[in-house]
Image 1 (cartoon, rainbow, N blue to C red):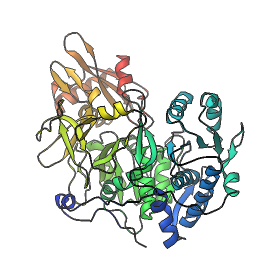
Image 2: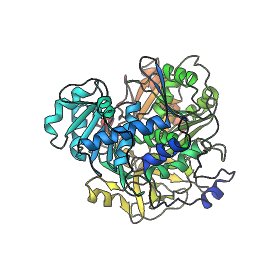
Image 3: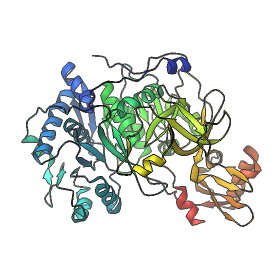
Image 4: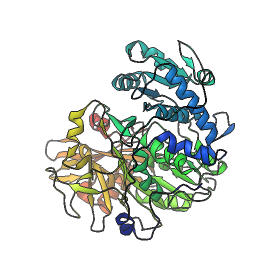
Length: 538
């Protein structure tokens, strides 16, 4: 069986976009397309390889996933889970995480992926807001759940994959008592599949509700930024947690859909040296590496040789320095892409089709129409800065915010979904991300985006990471301030050199007026710099 890609490979991006049309199946279930069709056609085909924390390697084929997920679906149903109910998932990259997704989709239930580093408050908010009836976790995270369980009246059952305490059911024990066949719910592409909570950079997290169609929506972007996935020998891994869109819909789901072996492994804290070793030892050919991971990997001296065919990155601006390093060390051009929780992978690069441009996050992928809008919602001409927006019709677009119709409506201007990100598009359709709308610095009448300045600062050999914000100034409204994590030589001399570097390489009017050296930068769980926290410091 050969998985058929949605995008027909070609040499002309405009022709590929013009010749693309979305599939419109009347019935579509993620458990079927991610697992069962492979289990019927090639039951022994390797689906998943799990590198345990102790170093043991375990392989799983599609028929094993089909039978085990059917058992767990029956177990969940036995505890009362019904179509439309929410089941929360608080696990790192493990086989049980895959099985929980598949089991829920079999029943027509809705998964709520949760990041394992969330504290009690973060978990309590998301579990209460989603009304999750059941939760799957492990011994490392179970105490957090038990500590807030009395505040969650909707949470009826908790399953643990290892330690059992506080009334938690054993995941494998419950699975072992259930039948290994389970009929699939008759879901349509628009039926709810999972709720992905925004990282909360601009207010309380909102639950973006996605339908089963979300996988189809991601495939054009995934296939193209991985240089026409799938190819013979492909094997996928990402350090990004599967609780986030980057890990779940950019890697885990597309790998299973295309029959590409998926590597599951994630340390509690990203280890750049271990990441190199894993990719070498596990034969990884395709990876999604967020910019933060790439910056940490760049600091590894004498990294081992890896055999990568494609690398995707997104979430923060990549910068020319990282791109050059990627070609030299990773052996391939990093294809930068853009999207957000509500509508992911709408822009991207595919260096085998067109040459990426420095600073550009790519062009609109097949199936997605993207434009720059002004404050009134009108489409701007090429070269003008405004807000990046995506037109309705892209299948990766969310169904709406969970229980927040007013916020859903506010996200749109007519048929355009506003991203809240500032950017521009050039005359050939290349998009350039500039900043979050709330990150724009207004200084002496200029509107200044931080990304270009940060890229310039991190190009200095003594700088590991940098973030730029505006701080209040009685004369200029705001002045540019840089927070810098230095590799060495932190002090007045380096600060002066960095200010001079920006003045010379970009423009004097955007150069930081002050530089503060810090040990680390505040980041969201997805690795995005939390500039609002830095702005609050002043």
